Each structure stands twice: as C-alpha cells, then as structure tokens.
Amino acid sequence: MDSIVSDVAVGMKRGSDDLNLYSTSPSSVTANENDSSKKLRVEDRMESPPSRVLHIRKLPSEVSETEVIALGLPFGKVTNILMLKGKNQAFLELGTEEAAVTMVNYYTAVTPQVRNVPVFIQFSNHKELKTDSTLNQRAQAVLQAVSAVQDGGSPNSDTSMLDSVLAHAPSPVLRIIIDNMFYPVTLDVLQQIFSKFGTVMKIITFTKNNQFQALLQFSEPVNAQQARLSLDGQNIYNSCCTLRIDFSKLVNLNVKYNNDKSRDYTRPELPAGDGQPAVDSAMAAALNKDSSLLGTPSGMGAPYSNGGGFQSSLSLSQGGGAMSPMSAAAAAAAAAGRMALSGHSGCSGVLLVSNLNEEMVTPQSLFTLFGVYGDAQRVKILYNKKDSALIQMSDGNQAQLAMSHLNGQKMYGKIIRVTLSKHQAVQLPREGLDDQGLTKDFTNSPLHRFKKPGSKNFQNIFPPSATLHLSNVPEDVTEEDLRLLFSNAGGIVKAFKFFQGHKMALLQMSTVEEAIQALMDLHNYDMGSNHHLKVSFSKSTI
Image (cartoon, rainbow, N blue to C red; front, top):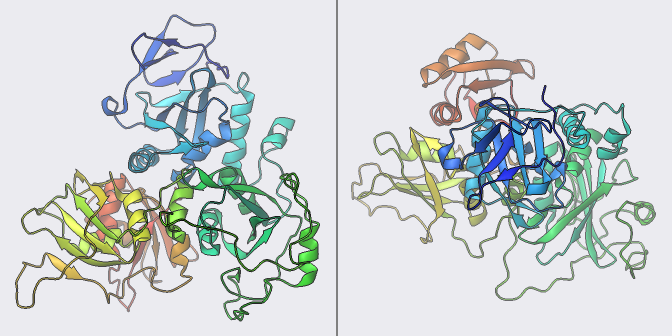
C-alpha cells in the first residue's frame, strides 16, 4: 500500500486551482514521497461524477483532523482521510457514495464553516483513498478513534496517540460553556443539538461568572464522548455562541423542576417551579467544585453570583436588528452540518420550491417529504408554473430546516431548488373556485410529526439518505413483504434488517432519490389491522 505523509509536497499549475497528487491509479488517491513522476488532477465538482471521496479546499491552516472528519460525521461513516495541511486542503472518504452525495448536496445549500472560515467541498474524481498509517499516524489515529465512537464502542487505545486524541469518557454528563454569546441559547436549542448523538436525559442551564453554562446528561458516557468530540469549538450562530465542552465530574443530575432553565426528559410530571433554583443547594455546591479543562476565565471569581443558587435570567441586550433565536430543530441542523447557520429574523415560514417534475409532483407528495422536517400547513402548486410550489411550514425555523436538508435533492428525476419565499402565507383558493387540486390545506392533518411537544421525532431529524427507518410494522409482516412493497414503489432494495423485536426495521434503497420517492409513497401506508407504516430517513447504514 502506498504511504502518505502529513504534509504532502504537491505541485500547483500557475493560474489554476487544480491540485496535483502523486498517485499510481486513476481510481484512487495516493501519496508517495518516493514517486513524484505520476500526478493526478482533482477536477472541479461540476466536472466530476459522484464519488465517496470528497475534496475539501480553503481550510484554515490550523485545522485539525478531528474538525475535518466532523464535517462528514452526520452523513455516515468516515472511512479515510488525507490531510494536505501545506495546501490547506484535505480528502475525506465516506463509507458509501450515497452518503457523499447527501453531504455535497447539504453543503451546497448552506456553506460549511471551520473555525469561522468558509470551506469548499466537492467530489473528487477518484473513487478511493489509499493511505498507510505509518507515516501519518495522527490522522489515522483520529479516524480510528472517531470510527470507534461512531460504532458505539470504545476506541482501541493501544497507543498513547489514541489516548491523547480521544480521552476515556468518565461521565455521561457534559459541562457546556457558551463563549461570545451575542444571542440567547435556550435549553431546547441545546437539547436538539446534542440529541443528534444519543438520548438526552436531563439538562440544567445557569449563569456562572457572567457566562451562560449548562450541564447535560446523556443516557450513556459514549454518547457524551461523541458529542464532545464533534461539537467542541463549533458555533451555534454565525461567528458567535461558541460551544466549549468538557466532561463534568458529576455522574448524575438531580433536576427538581421542568421549565425553561432545567428539564428532566425522563420525568415529564415534574412541576414548573417558576422562580425556584433549578437544582438543590447540594448539587450547586458540587457544581462549584466541578473543575474542567476550560478553567475559570481570568479575573472571574469562582462562587456563584447568588451564593449557591443560579441566576434566573441571562444578562443580554439585543438591538432592534438582532437575530431572533433559532428554534431547536434549526439549531440542530446547524450543529449537524458543523457550520453556523444564519438566523432569519421575521422569516414567514413559506418556502418556494422550483424545478419540480410537474408530471409527477402532487401537494400530498410535497407535504409528506417536507413534513420530515416540520409540520407543513399548506401546499400550493403554482397554476401558471406547475414546476414550482409554495409550502407553508409552521414557522420560519422549520422552513430553514427543510430548506437546508432538501435544497439540491433529486425528486422524481429532477434536482429541486428550495428557497425562502417573500410571501407571508399560502392563500387558499376562493370558495367555489376550482384550482384543479393544486392547493391543499393540511392544517388539521393527523400526520404532522412535530405537533406533540417533546416528541421523539425531534431527536430523529436526519438528512435524506438511502437508508430508511421503518416503524409501526405489524408482527405478521415479513421481510419479503416489505422488500416487495418498497421495490414496487420504484427502485432496488439493497439491504434490510429488523430490530426492536419486529416493530422496526432499516431498509436501504440503491440511491437517495429512490429512498425519497419511497418515503413519499409509503409513509403512512396502511398495512392492515390499523397499522400505518411510519417512514423516515436514517443516519444508520446496514
């Protein structure tokens, strides 16, 4: 296997951004310090067909391997990495081509940022990375550690390198400090950001040393480990509200009240306790002794401002033009993409979707697809331009979320474009006017996924993927029944797996487009005996 070095000497053509790498095969990217005669050019994204190898450019010079890998984490397993720090570039290999396509589409909608610097991601014209860990141990150690955490296990810590990259998770409780907090960060925002990595059990928010802080407890320490690895140093909003994350010495949080400052998701019956401290004095004392790698900011005193309790409000001032806080789900999308996502103050929640297949699209299909990311209220296919539609979501944050996930996806053979509309609402046709069924009001639909506060659906919002999550499966339905059902929807079923006994399953289509069509056709499909199949996108692979 060819060997790689952490800083590859690469040749650059004058007047061109094309990157030349030493290589031995047109289908793989390799780096060999002893072979400088063979070079390959990485072409621009628009000229390269989809590949599971992605070329990342214009990275900040101080970027770490962990930060580059984190760009791909939400979309599937990251299988290899090649860092070209001398050229501020990297190559990232994902487990499947479908995952890479989803990642490129996602970052086409919203520009990713690493350390507040916009970076550019495109397909490589190579199909795999060939690397040798002997000459780039750190990058491979990071990859091994992250892969172990992604798989839900513990990294193999045979070397001190791995120990330094990913410390043992001592606790399921994380201590979170928000730096540069120009805009409010709510408990719900934190819940949605961190639930990407596992079940969030409890959260306590408070102000200490004039800084907004939080304690967040996962169900398992490994989930806390993955969240810390992926989110530490990331921004919630553009260029501000930076997450600083470390393990707490506490191993369990004792929450007394469920309100906007503390929440125990395992005990919804707790009182609101308005005006009361979030936790008792014993825990407050324990928190006061809770040391972390972050340390106390210079010049700040250690005690809590009110002698062991918690300040009841944030000391924030917002100008008239300040951005309104993002909702929980929209913030989760930003965190999942590892980039800041601009808030849109006063956004109406209406989306304009264009380049639709007008022969195939219906209001119902749009309602079902966009309903994965929010509660679509009304859908109108434009009468004089039937390849375009207006979709009214419940609020502007749901519209942001749907736009960031669906812009650039392929639906019925066409790549759709999703933007925010200037319209404040979708108007229904006048009574008695026949608009050929182009406008539908779904306000009272029983199929809204997010109508119930605290619904588990908030924790399962993922980008479109080839793998679908099926639930509410009747006991008498077999694997063959489901394979046949989804094959008839158009496409090829590549893999299938039951879990949770027989109630749920993962089903993998051959492409993301096929999965999108299957979800639109078969979500809420009547399986008999009052069982309606529930279909959503999964972050897992089979």
